[in-house]
Length: 427
Image (cartoon, rainbow, N blue to C red; front, side):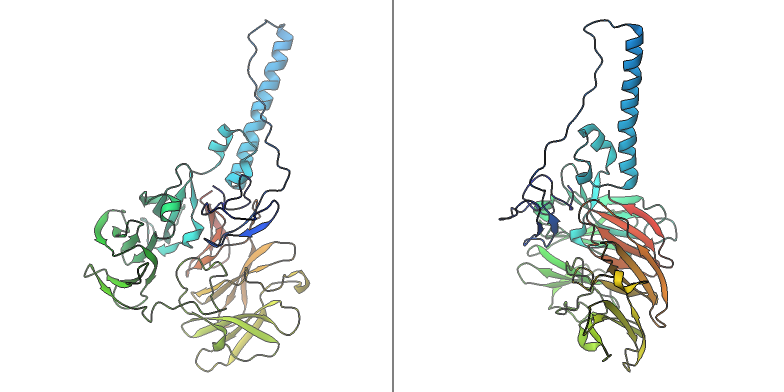
């Protein structure tokens, strides 16, 4: 199921909810899961499928038979070539609806990256020193949810656990968190599972009082995760003790600041550590802060030019003294080509001394760019590949070595040092 243009129905392609007034050719925001998609245009005729089968009714002259054989071979090679090209281009299922079903089955992956659950969690998965990751995937056939681990060298799947229910059953209550060498997972049956990070082997199961609404992991101290519960009986799970204790939201699980969430307007995944609202930004002429993100001894305020054309701007400063260290336009090159700051584009993160942020061009092209958090020097700037349907990035996560960008139903992995594309997962 694609999360881009909905070609088949007036239902949300992400959660399946029925949407009133979702007429043809409109961009719709699902009020149930927050997914944005574009409905089909008014005129959408069914695809033409040409079936070529050998004739056995009457014998034909050898010359005509040879001609038909050549044409048949040419057509077959043409169709296979088209399917192969689209597969290499990484098209989603929505891009392939005009092909025969036999080709669709061979041209798409058997799972999607479930962007609703948020970006992946970087983790030491696999036998190499290359960073791997853990996250939620969604199978295409039966629409089941799994938690899966991938190694970072070739982005290969190491293990997956599940199924954890169908998407409609479990998408609001299935979460994962990495605690040391363990992965904590909640399911829609109100269970908490603990799996070994290396093997996916289940080591513990606990019963919760209700379904989970979200997880938040402690960044220091004991291996703990705070679980927000649907019945408001929130708990902290202590991995070492194997117990849950009733607890309000701890200080290490920040609430999203109004207007200052670094994850973007879709706010997918757990709260971003070090992200705060605009009040912590220094006063800078012709600059209006949107959020502030801090990592160690470096802070960066993401904002926009104000007054004037609201082009995105970043300001680096000392988090203790508020002394401004640098100021730079987020978009590189000609600023007349940059789109104004919007809620869709406001997503930023900082790790390994790099501040990474997205921006859009007026030609509808999306870029990710990285700055040295202390000096403001632009380290790299890369365009995102164009995809069928709505190609806005749907959030990302950052580590010292990798950038993980969610694109509709897929995941793109970039090298955090130079911006080079490592690979694409989930198409």
